[in-house]
Image (cartoon, rainbow, N blue to C red; front, side, top):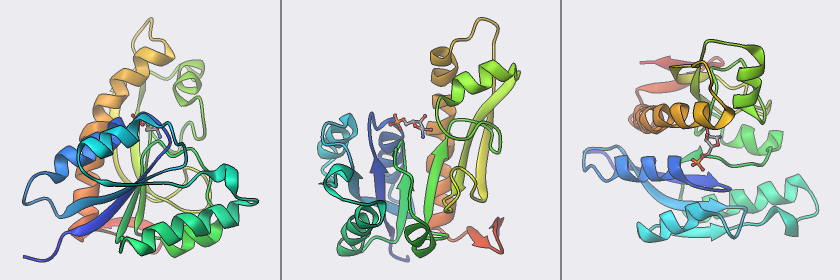
Amino acid sequence: MSARRRVAVLISGRGSNLKALIDAARASEYPAEIALVVSNVETAAGLDVAREAGIATRIVSHKVFASREEFDRAIDAALTAANIDLVCQAGFMRIQTEGFTRKWEGRMLNIHPSLLPAFKGIRVHQQALDAGVKISGCTVHFVVAELDSGPIIAQAAVPVLPGDTAQTLAERILVEEHRIYPQALRDVAAGRIMLRDGRAVLL
Ligand code: GRF
């Protein structure tokens, strides 16, 4: 059997998607292992999720760097030092430089709580409610320099119900996030999905 791909998860907060990835990677046949968790926020609850699972953690605070380039270089150094093959962003609230995204092109994934290309950026669930859509959902995509715009790997649709608030909609979408992110990582780690000519293609 080929070696499992070494994955780093970048977080800034709660870490529920991190936990979903960790749980999936416990299966012996899963083609990836979560080898490192990097947070730019020292108090991120997700760091405890990682520690409880016995996974190495690194805190790289953006506040100590003068520029985005220097911050990204520090993140990149942490990934390289840990021999990371693939990167999963999971609630990582920093925008990355073009150089960093280009270096990890095809090897860095993100999860976003809308059906992209609708509702990029922040306050995503409120954007969906304000637009009056009847279906929203979540998207796993390869990361490119432009925010929330990379080639789409997987999506799941979720109904928007009458009376939904941003919070109730977020909770319903989160269930699907936890389902599709481990599947998407599995497919990329196994080489079944690759970035080719600006598209995520199923081989
Ligand atoms: C998720 O909704 C994810 O889609 C978005 O940020 C949230 C992170 O939640 N990018 P968690 O930290 O994984 O619980």
